[in-house]
Amino acid sequence: MVIRANFRHIKERLQASAAKRGIPVTDITLIAVTKTVSSEAIREAWDSGIKHFGENRVQDALPKINVLPNDLHWHFIGHLQTNKVKSVLPVFDLIHSLDSLKLARVIQNEGEKLNKKVNALVQVNIGSEDSKFGFAYEEVLPALQEMAGFSNLKILGLMAIAPFFPDPEHTRPYFRRLYQLFNSIQIAGAEMKYLSMGMTNDFEVAVEEGANMVRLGTALFGARDS
Image (cartoon, rainbow, N blue to C red; front, side, top):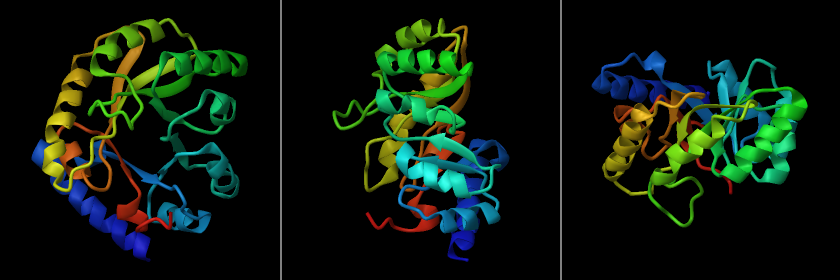
């Protein structure tokens, strides 16, 4: 029941942020981040009406995916190592963390073997932080132009993790700049459909600045054990 109550509160906050931006809240996709979360808690979230779930590691996700209803949509949101691509592609609907051309080539090759077009978001390192993965702003367009030739890779937008600030208002310029990039991209083969940005600390600002996907863990499930 705690998860259901948390979800209700999150929906109210999303509604308010969407209203500030002048869009319906139904335009925003909530992705429940299930790192360290049990399959029982995920089922409660699903029973509450959440359909999209995000995992950081494939080895943690598979045991949950195997015991949960098959109409959940699974998003891979963690750093994807090239040696894990083969395990990720069959079970995830969308990869949020395409962070290098090397990874794009591996996804293309594995997608070709599976005869599958892989949906992915390009990760942008919006804070130019050494601790985070992703393309720099100036690398995004050349990378998209190269990936446009990959027949088994479908780029559907951008993803980013903002620098952490105790006051989420400080994230606003980073989100705004990424939205401007997202809105300006016109490259054949790259569909700018999803902008995945915003987490528990800053999702309201992210929505106000253009996000249509937010990734929430702590706000929904409570603090992680680890």
